[in-house]
Length: 202
Image 1 (cartoon, rainbow, N blue to C red):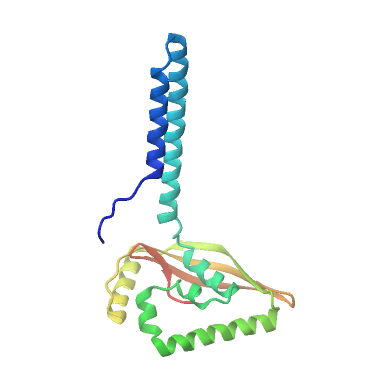
Image 2 (cartoon, rainbow, N blue to C red):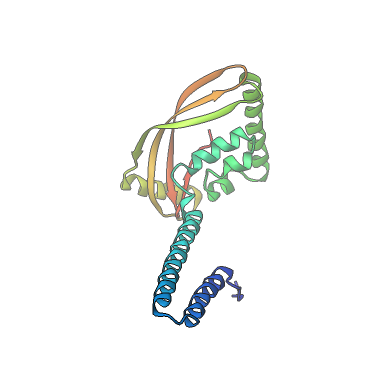
């Protein structure tokens, strides 16, 4: 990707603030006034620098903090609640999607997904909601993660690096205008090449 020079409005804003502070200092004659303005300028610079750190932390959170071990579960639940197959399918890794859901079977999988949504609406009500809470979280041992890597290589011909994983026991509830039910379900989630996925949709 070619590098394009971009303006940095935030950086320019900081520079202008510091410049104004220095210009103000030059125009002040009395030593007390100089001291007072310097203290204010210093406080302003510290405030601005602190704001810069907060902004940086926010950017880092948006880039790296939004994908956690719960992300695949959240994608599945959000997909079910919004009847959006594409959202739910983000829970499983792309290489699995490519192999398990070719063009024709992808359509079949989406149809099966939407059929389940129809069933939910008929059984629980049009305004059904799926919720979950984690009742047990157990870290998967490193040796087992390596085995999963080997299984993926063998079955999907995909070399991946799995750095973490959990076995999650969930309490799920489906509630709507007609009735409510609770179930327990187990999911395994894996951090594959830096992102969290699971190996099943339901």
